[in-house]
Structure formats: C-alpha cells, structure tokens
Amino acid sequence: MLSVELHVHSSLSYDGRDPVDLLLEQAAAVGLDAVAVTDHDEIDASLEAVERAPEYGLVAIPGIEISSKAGHILGLGVEAAVPPGLPYEETLERIHEQGGIAVVPHPYQESRHGVMARITSTQLAQADAIEVYNSRLLTGRANRQAERFARAHGLPMTAGSDAHISEMVGQAVTRVGATERSSDAILEAIADGKTSVEGKRTPWHISFRQAAGGAKRRVISRLAELLE
Image (cartoon, rainbow, N blue to C red):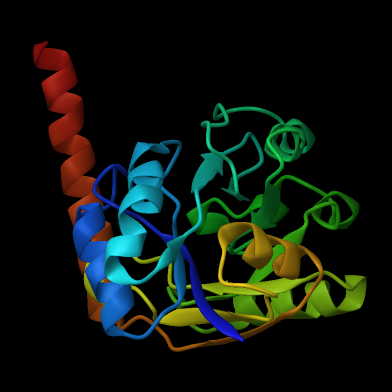
C-alpha cells in the first residue's frame, strides 16, 4: 500500500503560501510515497511538482482543484487546466477527456464550496471518488456524511489534508493498493476502490491562520490588479 496525499495547495493558489519545493520536502519528510498538488484553477505548480518529485524520492500526480458552477472538484491525472465556472457534469467530462479521474472534496461543506448545496445525490454519484476525510474540519460531521454516501453508493474513498501551508502536508493520507509506484497505477487503483483513508484534524489555529493568510493574499492581489 502506498501512502498518498491527494489535496495540497502551493503559493500558486490564491490562498496558498509555499512553493513546490517546500511541499515536496515535507511530503518526503513525513514518509509519503506520492503527492498531488491541486491548486485552485491553476496547474503550473502541479506540473512543476511532477518534474521535481523524483529528486525527493516521490511520485507526483498532476492535478487541479476546479471551481465548477456547483463547487470544488479535484481533477487528478490531468495536465491542462479545466476552466472554472462550468456546470458539474461538464467539469467531470473535461477531466475524463484528459484521462483523469474526478474526486469530489468536502462535498457537504457548503462554506468551503462543497457541491452538495447545488447538485443532487444522483449527480454526486457520477464522480469517480469521494473525499471522505478532509483534515480542515470543525466537528467531522461533513466527513461522516461523505463517507456514508460513498459507502452507500459503492464509490471509492480518498482523504486529503487540504494543506495550504507545507507543515500540514500529510495530515490526511489515502492508502492506495497500486500495482506499481507510478501516477497512472495510483489513479487506476483509486478508481478501482483499492483505498483506505486515515488522517487527523488540522489544528484550529492553523486553519484560522491559513484562512487569514489567504484573505490577505486575495486583498493584495486585487489591489495589484486595480493599480495596473
């Protein structure tokens, strides 16, 4: 079983802090086998991670967190950005057209762009996998809802730290029964449901710091755009 981190943000995300090297360094330090950098509607850092990961003894899975019209969707195994703002089903189609898999993160957390505020259970079941453990939680209720849904519909389950700072990489891990240590084999095993999840909660003060840092960076970015 490989230890895989499937939900990490770099400084390329509007609310991320650290460059790819720090994310990979932390992933290696905590004993991960593979990591997916999944920035918000950006893919360049993820592709950089794919190139740099072997230097750290890691496999990097190309990916992106897409802001669909319904909410956030992880596209894993894609090498070109999927445009934000598309309907839920079209976003899944765009991911599949690239040979990737669509994983829905934190589907029941409306405050964090979870999709279940805008789609039906039938639509959610069209995903390739459901993130059933997200480390950035308050009570764990939304994670439990996601797990119940995935089990009831026979959907593969994943976990993700949703790290926006390098120190939190590896807080949540998906154990994947892949046939080999490669991105393709890992994605195939996830799609086949050969996974188990484990994780621990991101400390509340770190979640608050991540959120505050993201808000600050958004303000600075917006001011820079207005001054151009």
